[in-house]
Length: 479
Image 1 (cartoon, helix red, strand yellow):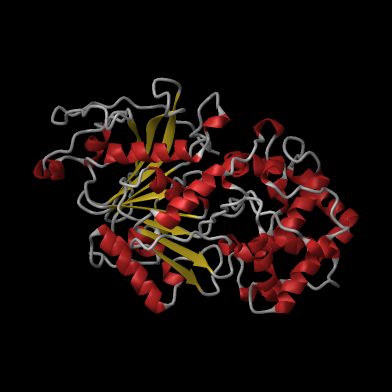
Image 2: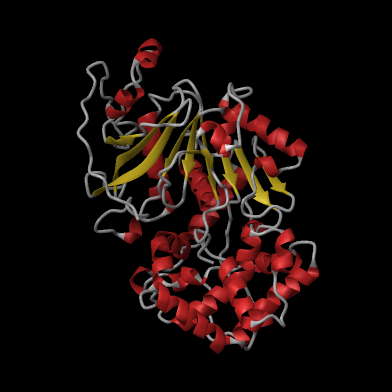
């Protein structure tokens, strides 16, 4: 899906002196130019002057008012051994002006290669970088030591990129991300609190004690405004498992037609089938709204109707090897540090065949499975509650991932919940008073008033797409 690009040789400008190692972290960056000289130096030349940074390409047709670059930055595979193995980490830059705020968008996943503006970027009319998470291909060391995929190593990746670019972009920095990307921005803030001037984390789960998942079961007993909708969703799962042979036959036919296999991860199509059925209600509320309850079939629906609904909501192809392997880095992090929600599925007792299936390690090849370390999330949760500052959290009322949220300190930090919203909740979805308050807070942190150019939501107008804050389909969870 992605092409690993070779590094291009870049000439270093004579007017730019190379700084020494920054803070003992092994981070080399270009010295900041005097304000007048910096404004007259081409941004492409300034980027090429940064040691370790490669300008892979610049768009010949950038969005109006911007320049758009695809970049890589040389990172140690292990930041505790900076002289050892290295890899190229991809990121993109949407450049507006060096005196505008910079938004650090942490993807938590792969990096998209098309230009977009996250909501904070639009609200402050700023620049934006979007960084691919380590170990998502092609930003993966080769060979890969998966023990080096942890929240501190990833936070240090972002820290080094910030240090490299701050001499060029010396205005305020705000980090942001959605779901796992939001979690990533929080972890970066925890380990390097001075890198940015504020964090806007969207729909970020906080599984502080992995084994205590009661809030998720309570969520599904009360989500939405329609008890009949919840009952019909439970009925879809129940009927699908009761009709396992018929459903499996349809699944097998689709797998054969699509060339799907089940040998590398789950081991059988039967396990994949059960996993998809277990995922259906979660996926419905993560991506759908109360209005979509009208599409939920009744228990008397035909097998074809049940299969089509489940496929549209949860996606049968995802738990095939071809669907799940690209997200191995996500499941590995969930298994070893982030945690995962384990539901009781009381309404499915006697119908499931694989106890303990619904967990992160089930979605990993055997050699990548790991033991969970509870200390990492407890540390982050304690820090967020007691010592964090300038943290803004946005959740969706009907999003299952918000069942275990972060609770920030009172140090200039805030939490908002968008009524009726799913995993795509954002500031715009808040009630007007909270929307205005959150926007004002973000702009205060970024040291701007109103954007100099009005934000537009129509991508045709300015050539930019907006970031869909709901993660792309099937980038959703390790469970």
